[in-house]
Length: 278
Image (cartoon, rainbow, N blue to C red; front, side, top):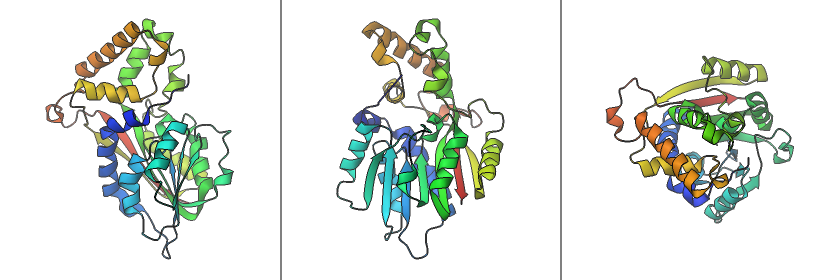
């Protein structure tokens, strides 16, 4: 099932990603090794509308970087990113589905730094994904990756898609919602071993715990609808019922309201922050 989110809708409900991206980039940006002579070449994988790139990657780049290349599989998202960076001649955009192993990336060249913010959990074949990242790095280049390992939000989706009424709309939920580390008992170990086997060095794999919750049901549903979903296959009544069940589950899991109401050890999401050099 294909799905393409609306850029304006995505930007409106981007707070969950903005909050975490700021925290983790501020905390770990010292890992990055910028080129001593400048002219850094940067790739952002799964850039979507470019908002996260613009707010959190661009401000930490050296002033004399040579190029920032954005890739995403969605033409709508790339169009929004092009408009956002229209006045910056150093920024270019290209359609590329990084989850598609047959999708060519050899024409991209190589990069000194590769970023990806909240995109790689949608890639089922992590081995191939990290191999491609490695191949796209120049010698000594590094990658800085943030993505979700597991989340109560995903458990809501799993519970919904497991219901008989909705199963016909999503016959293969694992294909639509890969989240490859969701059931991994040792996600840090799995990623570390994989990166070592590929050839990465100076590897850092952190699994950060998040207590983030949405302030209102409308905010939750806005974010929920920005994810891949079967709503376009449903009747208006089915859409209404599907969203109501999602909201009811979110309320039941205390995912809407005041973050202070959650216990300190009551984790909502586990989020990877990953670094490695070639």
